[in-house]
Image (tube, rainbow, N blue to C red; front, side, top):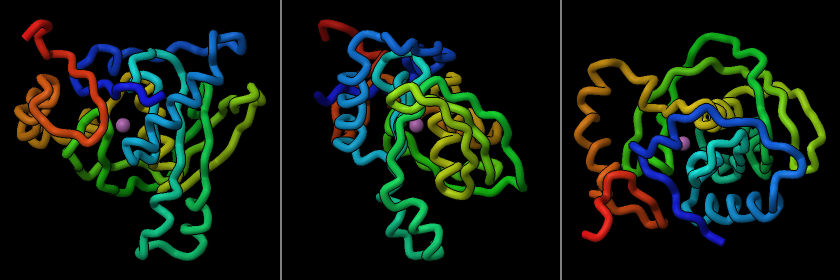
Length: 196
Ligand code: NI
């Protein structure tokens, strides 16, 4: 089932997600719905707060990035078919010299900005079978994981911009929260007055 994606301005996007227990009700169904919602919106990642749940789950499938001609063959291979659910993730370490990538977010349609992040990340998480893993990622894979991880910490990529950039974007972000945008997927807007 395709779920509506929560738009910028909804308080759920600002909550620090809580851990999920292995007996969380209908977890398999929730994950299936999140995958369907993400693919429908042509995203490479989706976090539970974006469908209204302040819990520590996010999904990543970087396959669409594998076609990027600016990448080495090795990088393309790493991105192609990388599909994972991260449950109760904790970033252990980030390292390296910050690099810039132009990010977007399904909760903030039509806004793309350069964001600085460290290139390498070590993360612990549980997979869909609640098996625990600790892995190290870099490059674009790390980038997508860091962006989604921020969502379960209540952080959005626009928080990472300079004060000037934030001021310039303020009007557009307010418009998004009021539903004054068009996205080609279902969304839920916090500031649309009911019954109007
Ligand atoms: Ni996002």
